[in-house]
Image (cartoon, rainbow, N blue to C red; front, side):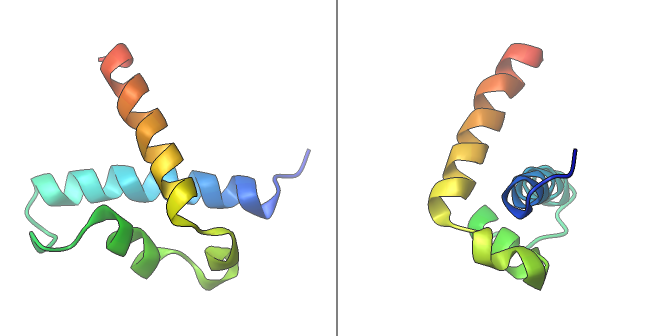
Length: 71
């Protein structure tokens, strides 16, 4: 089974959120850079067409919800 570009984009967003969180804790990202800006700047060009604020928000909400349950 091959992943669709949308599924790959979702994986990349999830990874970027995790990376943003880690880099923020390590103070490697400016305080004024939002997670959305970070994702938009670091998303590979081939997947930007699938990128949307709604998708980022949905994934961020999902991760936030399940992070609390898994901790």
